[in-house]
Structures are given as C-alpha cells and as structure tokens.
Length: 447
Image 1 (cartoon, one colour):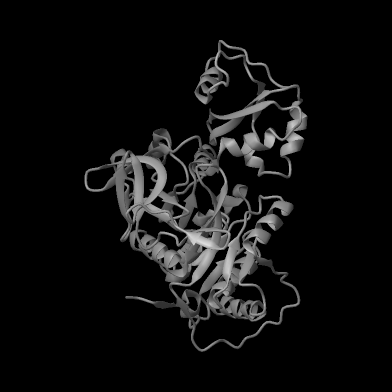
Image 2 (tube, helix red, strand yellow):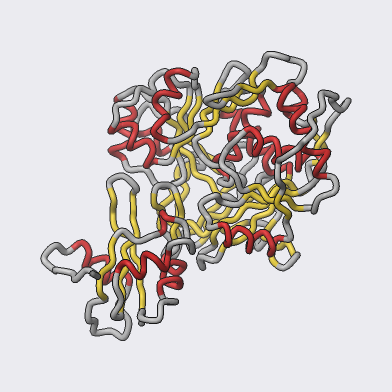
C-alpha cells in the first residue's frame, strides 16, 4: 500500500523551462517554484504547527501552502471574503499563526529529495454543515493526492496544458486545480478577475477551466468562445437544462461534476457532454463509492477527509463506514447519480452555499428586529438569491450596516420586506416563498 509520494512540484524540477504558474505579469517555472517553496519552508520551521493562508490567489500564497506541506505543517485556508476580525477569531480558535512574507532570504540550493507522508494532515478548510455553523474540515495529503489522481484519470491533463484558476484556493474547487496540475506537470494560470476570463482564455492558451453555472451563464451571455478548450468542469451548484443545451450547441467541452469539501472536491463526474443524455451519466470517480439510504447520498473512499476539528479533537461521523453528505439523490442504471437537492434550508447562490439561519441570526442581533426569516428567490444569473422578511420597526440601511463586516457580501439579502401577518404563530418558509412568487400580492418593502 502506498505510504509516501514524491512532492509533485519537485518531481518536475528537471525541466528548467516548464512553467508551473502564470500570472498577468509573471511566469514561474517548476524549478523556480520549488526554490521559492524551499525558502518559505525554512522560515516556517520555527512557527506554529498550523499556518494561516488568507490571501488572494497568488504565486506566494501557493508557495506558502506547499511549504507547509513540505515540513508537515497544516495550512489553514481562510476566505478572503471574511472580515479581518472574523479571520483573526477563526485563526485563534484553530491555534494557527499568520505569516508575513517580508525580508525572506531566497535560496537556490534545492533539497536532494522530497517526499510527502500520505497520512500527514495537509489542510484545514471551512465549510458549513446543515446548521449553518462553520466546520473545520481536516484533509490529509492522501485526500488531495487521490482526488487529483482520480480527476486526471478522467480528464486528460499533461505538461502541455494550462488550467485557469478561477476559484479561490480556500475553496476546495480551487485547491484541487493546484493538485491536478502539479501532479501531471501542467500549468496553473491565475486569473485576475472574472471580467478578464475571455481575454485570458484567448491569449494565454488555456486548455482547462473550472466554473460554477453562474460563470458559465455569463460566458454564454457574453458570447465567449470556449470551443477550443479541452475541458470545462462545471460544478458547485445545480445547472439548468437550458444552459447545458446552449453549451452543447456551441460545442463547448463541458463535464458536469458533483463534489464536496469533505470528499476533497469531485465525487462523481459525467463524460464529455455531447448530448442531453450524457448529462445524466454522472458516475463516481476512482475508488469512490456511492449509495443511497433514505433518499440521501452516502459516500466513502480515499478522498474522504480525516474529519472535523472541534476543540482539538478530530471527529468524522460515519454510519457503518459511510459518510452522509446531507444531499438528496438517487442512483440510476450502472451507478449514475442524480442529485435532487440540498438538505434542509440551505441554497446555492452563484456556487456559494447560503444558510438562511446564519443571516437570520445576525439580523436578529439588531435591537429593533423582533424576528427575521430569510428565503431564496430564483435568479437568472446566480440561481438563487436571499430575500429577508423582517418583523420590527427598522430601516433597510440599518440592517445593511449591521451585516457589513459581519458576513460575506454575497450573503446580504437582495431585498427586505416586512413580515406579513400570518395565521400561524410563525410564518413558514414555504409560505413566504409562495408569497414572493405570487405577483398579485403586494409586499411592503423596508424603507
């Protein structure tokens, strides 16, 4: 049984011209990236066992991540969307240390050989459970390695390919792109902003792309030509059939995928979508197994995380060796998965999970708010967006100010309405959703 692997970046240092990372202003080869990682690793030896990485996608951030892995430190990947105060609070709870990348002495001397222990802890990423409370998911080197290997066996990727990094590395979808590329000697191209995607795809010889349906929708709307790419991996949220049909008509090489943070990214992926029928053939990758119990999706395999970190204890809730994803689904034919929806009240907006309870809790901290209920409403671009119903004599700008700095902007409700009178003690979410759909009923907006 495999116990160690050679560092994928070190593995390609013999090719002095092979680009590892490309940005708008800079290209760094595998040997150069390896030297940068080695320099960062030297300063990390005296630091805490857990290192905070909370910076936008960059060469330095990626090098810091792999420097942690090289000396068996755990990289704690925090969202740059979180307010600074919240990040500091999370770092303190994780007992993680932030590092200032200044006055670093770079070394050209390379280590003779670098191996990773597959069982060593690699990363901690935050994800929300069904309660909306953030959970610290602990991954091992093995989790990321097998996730990348399974994906690369399904989507051809080699030293001539370039994957546009459109997702942040604190998101498992972004982090997995690094592992896939470095494992096969491909190049990671760091995107500046979404508005730059078309130009980057056209001028930087991009071959692979990962997007959520919202991003795919925008590219279709803007008539971006993606027909020359080898693979477009679409996941992170349900995708409507109209979007798939348009992509097929434009000869875009899309693959639909279903995954989770706990499973280190992809769980099941479709073949290249050439027809609407292909979109139904989403099957597990590698040794990943899926079963359905009580209409819920259960999984197991080498990519399943080590567990959730809580008060220095890592725990992984399993049922007879199976992990309950909390998602609703069904299996058809020879292990083809259909995901029917998310459990409980969570909904997805532009690829981001939104838990109504989290927003409601914050809104309810305002002294003038008696009650708050947040429900999703359909949105052409983002799929779903949050709408808030408020009971209390409070202004809209007061609530917007309250949420500012306490949660990510994408969680801010698009609209605020006064809570309608209800026969029941508390209006149900379903009732409020139906009110939003009923154009004959005039809802009163907060001033």
